[in-house]
Image 1 (cartoon, rainbow, N blue to C red):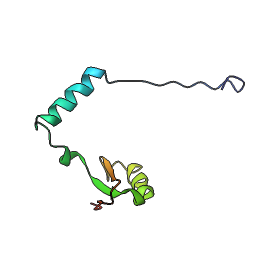
Image 2: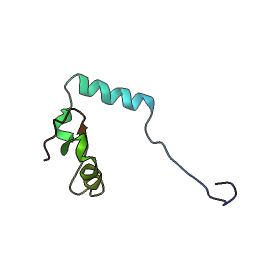
Image 3: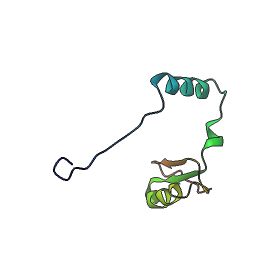
Length: 73
């Protein structure tokens, strides 16, 4: 990066407290995580999952189930 004069700029818009609030809401049942998952796929279908992620109009959250319990939605 130095010799090619490339810059990398990132942002972080959530705090540790934001993540803790989200975890608490999920743990208390105030938010149903199932409603956020648009696709559940077995790990073997990882390529398909990444294709879904490139089309946000068709997918919200893609969950990969390593134990093969995927059921494409």
